[in-house]
Length: 324
Image (cartoon, rainbow, N blue to C red):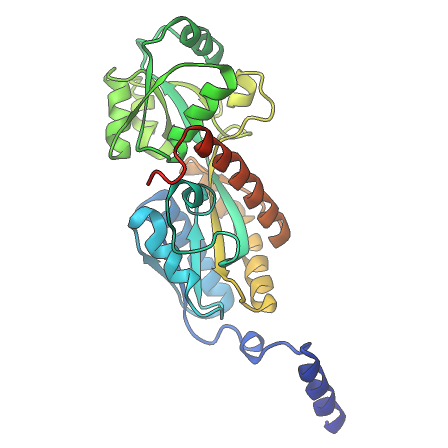
């Protein structure tokens, strides 16, 4: 026993012993903070896996919605929280890859403020058109847009992923399509159905009823794989013969930077197991989302870097850097 105590003491002096906080983690409730309101797709997925985390960790997992300020209220709250694994953040591509370039000032560092735990869902968009537009597929849309200069597309605002996705398409294929920004998602979609604008990248959940009613025509999905909820809709990569094309948002679980590695490792393993559960996957797919097998924390950081480069370069090209 004396030798064991001596060994632990030596390890602690060398900085190799696991912190006491990590050894008994968790010993109190865990709070997961979301930057969007209750009822959003982001929120529903978190509540699905939050129940499973609670079961496996043996402590309550509390979901707390803090929408507002372009996701910065929630993001800053976690960036400044104690790095002990008891306050976590669910973030999207906007918070981590787009806002740092789009906004003049943000209150967190997207690289240094957080430690990745899990990248578990991709949130694709559907390219839809008004049924009166004389196109049935992406190839016909590209050909029409090269002929006509009066086409327009909608989005829920400047700098959001649906807006940037269409700008990415325009730049990739040399198209001139006017952007019509709206204040919210429902109106931006309804105005495509009513013909005030001709097209747009839209969220699956918000647009599915109009698609099923024949008021919107599906041309493609923005992810690199097809959606189980719309299996007949081709990917944009397929439809435009652009194999590397993908413009999606994503959901990631983060902890404050400095959180002990044993805690991060445990949470990573639990999330990997939970999100591979067939029941969870089926429920997520039914929302029009794509569950993914999370990369390692190092892989997540590499993915973030690629996304920051892609979206940051586009925001700068459009002259939107620091515009908000």
